[in-house]
Structure formats: structure tokens, C-alpha cells
Length: 75
View (tube, helix red, strand yellow):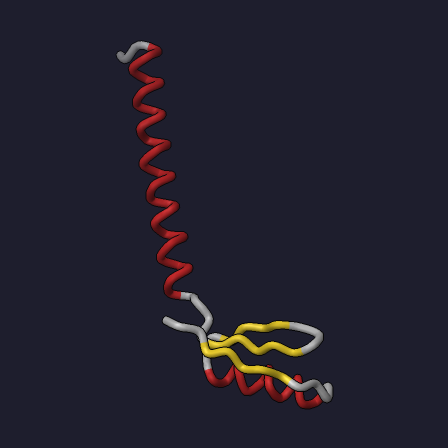
């Protein structure tokens, strides 16, 4: 049987391992899910992950009569 201090240290170590794993997952998700394009209008800014989404955003801007600027984001 473990005493209170040993249990505390084991619990803290487990928590730190879980936090490190969670941070790695979040970082991987952010890298994998980074958008490729950003469309700027006078009213809004929207990001697109692929060319289909980009086309839809540009079509929406044109339908609203807005001028837009396309920014291609680095990978």
C-alpha cells in the first residue's frame, strides 16, 4: 500500500503525462488542419482548407457584391 505522499507524486506524474500528451495532440491537429487560403473582404475574413471551400467563399463574396483579396497561406 502506498502512503499519501507517494500517491500524490504518482497522481501528479500521471497528470503531467496526460497534459503533455494532450498538448502534442493539439499541436498535431493545428498543423494538420491549418487552412490553405484566407479571403479578405471589407466585411469579413474567412479561411478555406481546400479549393472547393475557396470557390464557395469567393462565390459568396461575388454574390454579395464584395471585392475580395485572396491570401495564400504558407504550409
